[in-house]
Every structure is written in C-alpha cells, then in structure tokens.
Image 1 (cartoon, one colour):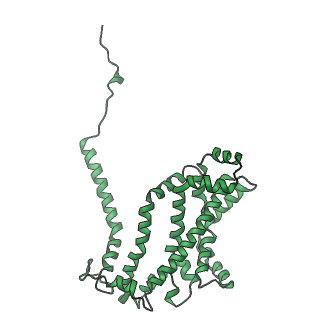
Image 2: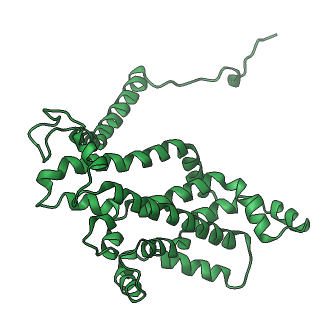
Image 3: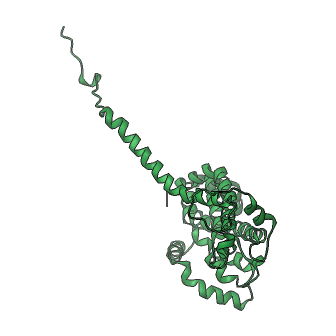
Length: 298
C-alpha cells in the first residue's frame, strides 16, 4: 500500500521574519513611551514646581533649585484674602456631591423610561432629546444667567447645583444602551409576580447595571468639579470665600498675582487632582466596563 498524507495534516505556518517580529513591537513601545512622556511632562513640571521654594514662575530651570513644602502649608493652613483653598474646596465638594446625586438619579430614570417602558411618542421624544443635547450649552448660558438672576439664585451654591443638575437627563443615551442589553424576560417575570416599575427599576435593573452606574456617577461628579465657565458667570461675588476651586485657582494666575502665587497655584492643581485620581484608580475596572458595555446596543 502507498502511504499518503493529507496536506491538511501538516499545515504550513508562515512566520514573519524575526526582524519584523522584534523591531515592530520595539518601535511601537518607543512611540507610546514618547507620547506618554509628552503627556506627562506638564504634569511633572506642575508637581515639582509646587515643591519649589520660589513663589513665582522660574522658567530657567525645570527642577527647582530649592525644595520646600511651604506652598502646601500656605494653601491648606494659611488662607488669606487671595488664596482661600479650604473654602474653595468645600464649595466645590458640596456642589459636586449634590449634583452627582441629583444628576445620576435623573439620568437613570430617563434611561430606564426610554429603554424599558413603552408609551406614546417615545421615539419622537427620544429623538428630540438627542437633538437638543447636540446644541452647545454656551448658547444658553446668558439666558440661564438672567433666569437665575430673576429668581435670586445667582451668587449661590444652590443655583449652581440646579444648573448642573437640570439638564443632566439629556445624557441618558449611553446608560440606555446598557439597559437595552438587560434581558426583557427578567422584567416580564417580575411583572407577572406583581412587581411595580419602581421595584423592577431598583431591584433588578440597577443591581445589574453597576458598571454603568459607576460611569454615570463619575461623569456627574466631574462636570461641576472641573467647570469654570458657568461658575465664573454665576458667581459674581468678589469675596474669595464664595468661589469654587476652578475660579480660585484661575484668579491666582492673574498678571498681578502670578509672581507671588504661581507655586501655590501649582500646589492647588496637585491637590485638586488627587481625589479625582484616587476615584479613577478605584473605579477604573467598572468605568471601562461601563463604557464598552454601553455601546453594545443603541
């Protein structure tokens, strides 16, 4: 008998040249390292400048000639009529926490209504909401200011919380995409057992949406925490104790103050970034899962 071999029994594996398999990953990592260096350079400079013994801007040296913690001491424990970081931090934290709670509830309720409930005009209302959300918020800022002025809520933390929270429901689209991936049979089974929409929302949909809820909460907190334009428009007070962190730090780099407070400004930038960085590190896993899962189904 003649011994025959099937060609498929010995598949031919074509390997790339050794030079390509080695050089390409090296070049890729070198390029990524270069981009990371460019991205991190301003942050490193901000950090080392915050530890400088010199109060103003010193562009002759990247690293300070003298090192000191006095900028952090002045920022945190020695507030004055110009730099009152504890008051700024407290105001921004109050606005951020309350806006986060209210906005997250609005977004979750709106997303649940459009995803899990069926009512007349649902598609038209959803399309209108998406279209309305495409317009830049800057177009309505002046109108918002005059409305808030008429009801006496300018120069007010409550006014800023209302502004940041009022239109948050328009950001429902990503969370709706996540809710769409939840099996409808779970909700139908709960309805057959006599569960109300509120029970289904709180006992079934929310527990299954933890990654996306984390994403929503982080976004809801970051918006007021980092915003400068709306805060600057609404808070007209000259008293630094009424400002937010963004307003206060911006004031430190004014022409008349930058020579004395620039290093303090850098220390403030580091202090503002620390809680946000910790939050992202803790929630990173859920944050990434929420973004990817929310884009599965629209």
